[in-house]
Length: 371
Image: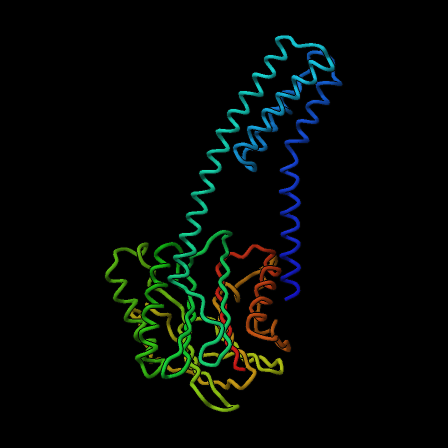
């Protein structure tokens, strides 16, 4: 947890220092231009430095700030020549005209940049709203269990992808799905919406995880036939379903049904790590045309103080510079975390360090802790 905070502070500090320098740069350019004009012989012009000031200000300052940078540049030219050199010929007028022209262009660039920023901010707000609608963040406590979820997009500034998670308290227990839709783009987002919508309905109505999985299979099949072309809809989804029954004492269990997804991990209170593999391999959801096998849920112990970790392959297939995969089970063995949020924060920071910040796939993490 401390590493994550330290990394953020260093990044924020570096970004703040860079922005401060860029905001100071127009002033430095004007000062250097004035000094150049003063100390060089007649015929040498500081116009490039004066012209650069409003151009540098355009992306980072307001329209007023950009205009001020240009006017101050012109004022510096006039002041230097009238007060110190006593010269004000055609070359000076040409220099002023050059800076004024560049200043006008800088103001135009400023308006374009500001309009683009406003459009980008609007697009991001729409993307955030869409993600919250399709993939809402689960409550911190559901059915007596502590819940934490995290979505890490591989592409900076991206909000929507093909990874998914959902948690629902039902009459049959707390039911969970974590999945990964093949592909990217709006087709993947559509598949995410279908899977989560079908899961929420089936989780309430079906008496077993096997029946829930079949409902998801049928939902993807229906949606796939309704849409035309593979680019319009991504019907191939790896998923893991979990069910934690209500009640029970120290030997409370969790049931896992895996459809071609990375295997969940149970972290016990003493640091012991258990990987919950399927008793029998199964195809991902949406591939029933290739064959079908009966779904069989695996049951594992989930005692007090234990944490169930479910994740997408953005975690387990994260590679370092040498091509070595991040192994969550090996990395978590022997470690104890105060809660599920701290666990996910540590994983996120470690994957970022493992890949050098160059993750190539989105990553969804969900942790469930039994108090």
